[in-house]
Image (cartoon, rainbow, N blue to C red; front, side, top):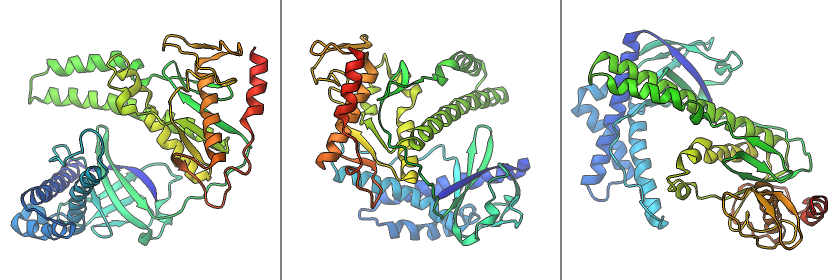
Length: 403
């Protein structure tokens, strides 16, 4: 599934109509959730059929396309099914009991309710909300008009701080020809450096939120000084939201570029299976961990690896920083100690470089033993253990040069 995104250009009346459609979707979702709460044994089919009942009972809800109403009910059932799954799997902590939505920002159409112009520059929404014909602004290389209409399974309108966007979900296969390099890497994410790989290469931590912190604080103070329910407060809130959106886009763009670079140049990637949700409970490091966006980076690594058809292996993080990558001696050290000095073999390495070597070694060992815990991707028809180089020889070379 590919997603093509364009910015929408229209009038104030059209934007108001979009907001009304978004509110109707939120209404349908919350009513579907209320039905599940009040009637024991409610099924997905009951939630779907309730959309027609709501359309008859509330005239404003009937203005929205019927399939868009069902998409709103699907959102409610997705939250319900996720709650059931978490309970069934005994997920630790909160199970995610469904909550009523207050700030919905999107409306989703399926096969009806919209019409794309043949030139791919305008889209017409034909339901009763009165959105009308909108202009599509985007990258000219994205030619959505070249796809058959049957392949466009979803059309979604999303409201953001800087305007309205439309997303076309196209059912197609994206093929990427991976050029094998014979390189296998372990990566260790961190705060001092964004990541360090098993070859000793590092990526500088951009710290997007930290760099924008002064401006964010100034905009937040300006918002707090404005009178509630005033026009100036709305303007200040919009300016603050735009700045947060800019930081979010910078973080995602950086994560995508770094992930694509590593996946394109490697045949295997191993990483630490970190429990980021538990790590951010440390109030001294939570802000820096959130700013780094490790989870987003690893998510894109797995996505790109799936396209390239290379394995991505998660390794348990136990003792990766304490264990010597050359001889296996446990050298205990605090977070402030950034250099690994082995008391057994005398090797001296950067702390993160040593951890990356241990991550790669554990991944290769688990593949060769057939005991991989879980992999992000494992392409079919490829014997992952057949072409893997032995980590011992590379470690001995590094150990000898670092003594």
